[in-house]
Amino acid sequence: MQEYARWSSMALEALSFAVILLAVAIATVHFLMRISKDGFEDNYKVYRANLGRGILIGLELLIAADILKSVVLDPTVESMVVLGGIVIIRTFLSISLDVEINGHWPWQTTRLAQEAAAEAERSEASSVAKA
Image (cartoon, rainbow, N blue to C red; front, side, top):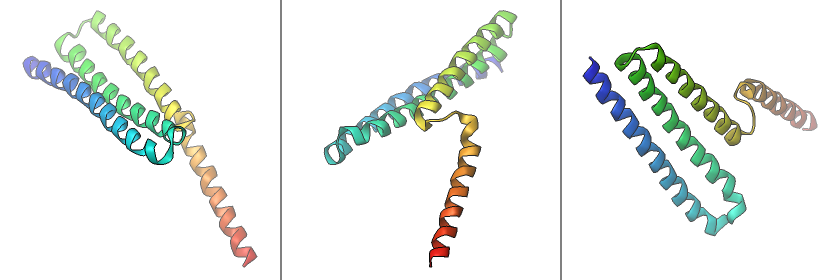
């Protein structure tokens, strides 16, 4: 079981590395292709958001690898404390990237969606009343 966990952890680490590199490559190519059409400023935010999404996926895979290593391979108090620190740091990075990409806190998504739906409903009612 431990050998399987070790290989799985290494595979997840390699996959996270590949995901981040691939995300950077795809986002950069997409950015460079669109920059000639739409200009730099219009595409800069989209580029950063795409980079952030790739990094977020890579971070999630790294957390999974760390959990496997800490819980299965080295289940000591010290490794759990280190895992806790790593998860806290990566969670902070994930939340920061999510805010950077979406422009709001993750827990505001439901409220913002409700406000957008209410605005669309008011807009629809307004256009029906004018007709």
